Image 1 (cartoon, rainbow, N blue to C red):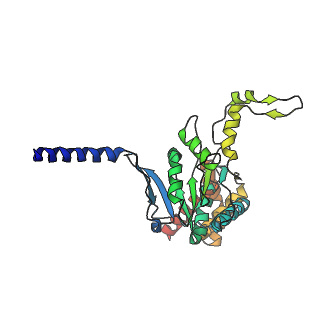
Image 2 (image 1 turned 180 degrees about the vertical axis):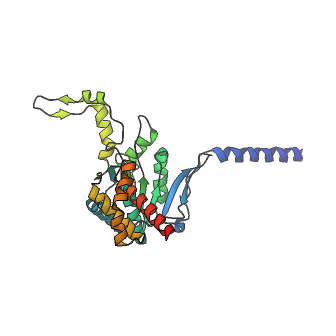
Image 3 (image 1 turned 30 degrees about the vertical axis):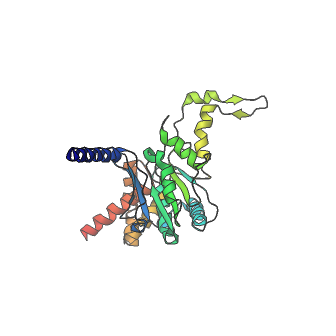
Length: 292
């Protein structure tokens, strides 16, 4: 009798363990000393974890050229944040490859010694943002929750989670958390021509957007600081190329000789962005080092 009971009890414990393994678990804290940057990831079981980034890119603010105005705004806001002063959530928008995400990473490099940490979250996982905020709430460090290339389609659940954390929810982010997001869209949601029909005009000439448009604007407005990036001119592009070639040890004479090749490289890719300039510089420096 006792043997049967013990066997039944063992099977019951195994069943409970299996059920617990698939139930949502509280988000655990990582080893905060393992890195200055972390990624939030969902396991196949549905459990979320904060993983240390083992190799953090060593991007510096001085590496980023031709975006001095944008750099000043982000650097100032981040400095206020790590000093415990009032600072804003930031939305960086504009042309692709112009340094939006690089600028955020460079700020991490600049201020990590002062306690700045970064947590990268995919837009699909933004529904778990309140859990992430709770985990870091009592930490002494300052955390930037970074959402790269952010945009939403209609009805995506992460939209409302982000909107609530930014502003308008009882469970707002604590004083040691800011949201930095990059996007090619100023309003983060797709806009359609038919929505222009929802605008109304008053007798005194004022224009008021309809409810659909208001909803799309409302998320962007919750970011206190907007920083816009623009396509580079040819001269700006070549200046960035020269800076990266110099950082790879290419001589001034070779940099001058590489100008025409850099322009062809940009033409083939249909873009004169900072990313394209960096890619050309790596290719050119690597090719010439191999020949040498």
